[in-house]
Length: 248
Image (cartoon, rainbow, N blue to C red):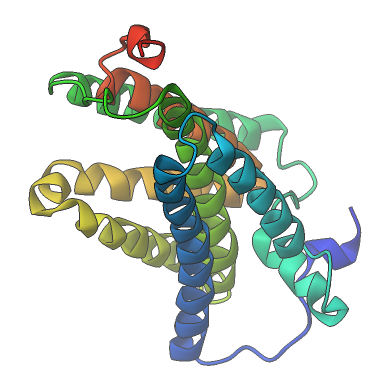
C-alpha cells in the first residue's frame, strides 16, 4: 500500500459544521443513489419480464461501476486520491490484523453475528412473508441482490465516506453521528418497527463503524452485512422455508 492511499489529501480542516454537512451530503447521496436505483429496477422487473432476474443483473453491474468509481478510478483524476481514501475499501495500518487488534476485530465480527441471530429469531416469531405473488426470479432477486445492495451501498455510504470524513473531528464522534443517521433512516419502516429494532440498529451500526476503524477496511463489514441480511431474510422473513423459493 502506498502512502498516498493511506493518508488523505493535505487540505485545511474545515469547521465542525461544514465537516458534518459535507459528510452527511456525500454519504446520503451514495445511499439514496444506490438504494433508489435498486428499488426502481426491481419494480420495473416486476412489470417487465418478471420471469427473468434482469434487474439483479443490471444492479450488479451498476454496483461494480459505482464501487470502482468511488474507490478512486475514473474521471476526474484529481479526486482519485480523495475518493480512494474516503471509501476505505482497503487501507489497514501496519499490524491492524495482528495480535490484540485482530482479536478485537474477530470479537466485533462475533458480536455482529450474534445480533443477526437475534434479529432472525425475533423475525421468526412473526408469520412468514407471502411471496406467492412474485415470480421465482423476483424471489431470488429479493433474497440475494437485496442484501447485496444493502451491504455494499450502506457500508460505502456510512462506514466509508460519511464516517471517514467525520473522523477528522474524532473517531468516536464519527461512529456516533453516522450510526444516528443510519438509524433515523429506518423510520420509514414505522414507529413500531423503530421501537423494536431501533436500538439494535444503532448498536449494529456502531459495531460496523468500529470494525471499519480497527480493520482499516469496509470489506469485512460488506461481507458480514450481506451474509447477515441474507440470513435474516431467509430465517426471519421466510421462516426458514426454502420451498417458497421454488414453488411456482
